[in-house]
Length: 227
Image 1 (tube, rainbow, N blue to C red):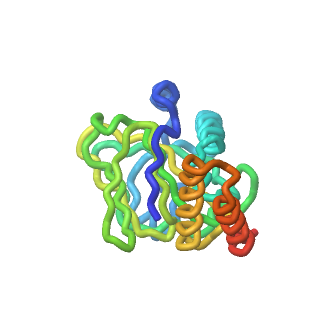
Image 2: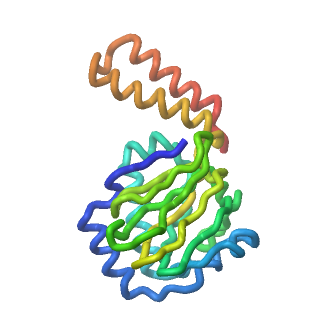
């Protein structure tokens, strides 16, 4: 299931991020790619141990902790420390699938990549191309979002970044290990959670049907959650 999540970062935060990233030291983006992905990848990236990447990435994780739509859609167990990339004119990332396990160089942990996320930082009017193209059960979805918005999608998906023909596309990207590893089950839980929220507005917190549905939701998480 693909989710577009609005306003993960405020416009003030985006402007501050872009100002800091403008003076950052970018390196070859292939350093975090697997063997097959490296053959298709051409972009720039901040080193994982960059002070700027660590600080700004920490702000993104804090924002995600407060974002109810992200929490409902991802059911996060662990969030890989956000990274930052830059696509200039001529850069692209051909069709690939993300590695199943990502080692976190900072903590030494290994994170299973159930979900992939791209948080757009550049104004979409400032560059041409650079669409994130994601294959799902209904075909190919093209994603190019306003700055501060994020797309969340199954890491099992084939995807690519279309070539940049003008300007620069700057974004943060990262992965999530979910409490529920199966995408189909996460989709069911998401639909139930959204229904609970809507019912709460219509009938109040104490309606017996709402209480029963909430109980069923949590019992499914107990049944489906993995370490």
